[in-house]
Amino acid sequence: MTTVHVAVPQGAHFLAPDQIVPLLIGATVGEVERELVLQTLARCDGNRTRAARVLGLSVRTLRNKIRIYAASGIDVPAYHD
Image (cartoon, rainbow, N blue to C red; front, side):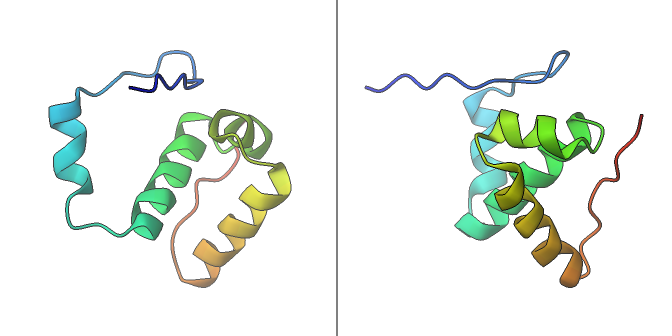
């Protein structure tokens, strides 16, 4: 069994596996990834640098994903000071 350590924004709440799995069933990997990116951005108040760090992505990769989401008409959390 592998242990995964995830950096979570301060104040974030953890979901139990029985709460997470129903959200994932029937979703594609792309849909799950998009939701993870969008939720992380929201919890980071739209701060792309902080969200990229939490997700383990480069800022460039995150920005590319955001561009694709925005071009598809998906609302992306805006940066809030």
